[in-house]
Image 1 (cartoon, rainbow, N blue to C red):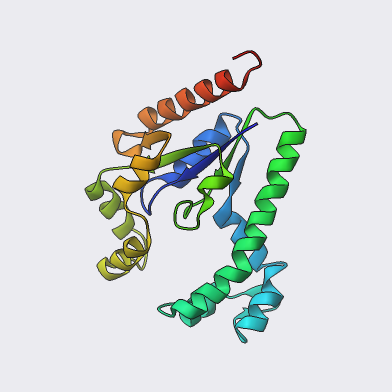
Image 2: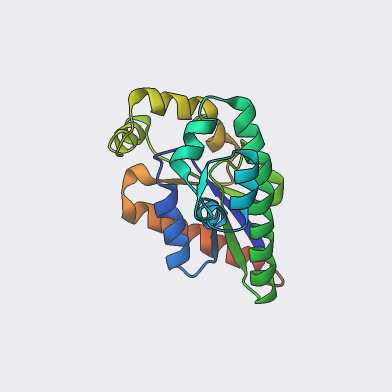
Length: 199
């Protein structure tokens, strides 16, 4: 089974691209969705122990937790040390399940693939990109987003140009949904062709 890492900076259209892979029948593991699930499950008591008062009724209160770790590098590291291994274990179980069912390829949707050293966990990397002005317009249209917040997020992410340089495949969502879907389908065809016996 070929494991595809899907990544891209904020506002590039990564979630939309992940849905396109799923719509085409490729199993997709979503790291963000996994974190949401963990915050309502096994991560909650661990987060509460590290950051008392950040859970309510056994579920992590993301607003309270965010306020506690925002701008505090040591606190953020402590949180990541709790969450990252749990997300990774969930992804490993997902891959084992689909490997067992004979899926030719699967996608790990990892927003911070390069930032967290996830490159060695996947066979190929798909980077979702768009022109900088398109990215900025999309992100600033989100509720509660400001220029300052966007600048702070981008400062923590590997620059788009560097991601594209390291990519095996690129999906440009700035060209519209049809072009992005065509790019996704072309990637799948290429990978499944490569994955067939005798190829």
